[in-house]
Length: 203
Image 1 (cartoon, rainbow, N blue to C red):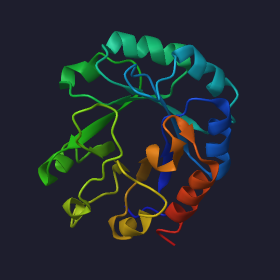
Image 2 (cartoon, one colour):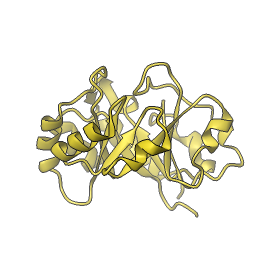
Image 3 (cartoon, one colour):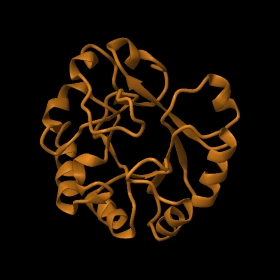
């Protein structure tokens, strides 16, 4: 399937202003980190307050690490999250126990890893020992001759390196640190630059 333009998720939202700025810039989805060891962690009740003020048709995604299905469902209900981003390794039975809509994350160490779940929409991020990502870029050559139309690419994306993605036809792009001026606080101009340059990819 040919992607006309990539969808954009801006992750690590911690405050209302950044959420509004991300939407104004053109983000399709906002990400909220419910992993307490992350500098971008937000309490579910605080995420709920932000989400309650958002306009319609914006997707809200919760990032989870090392949580049970029951806790994920509970937090998603409190925060009014649309989709759970499962950012840790689990078996398939784990997903059967989830009531919340979810998306799988592949923390890729090799080209073979990106072929996991290739019939499903999934996020592919570069592997780092710490969960939640450290802005590490994945080797783009791994995607050569691969159908990327169901891949959401994450890890080390910035407004300045998006031109390298043009030939890959990714379904969506997931950015956090690449549009910040410090951890957990977004830079409005960088968000605008990111979305504008992403939309230029397939023109």
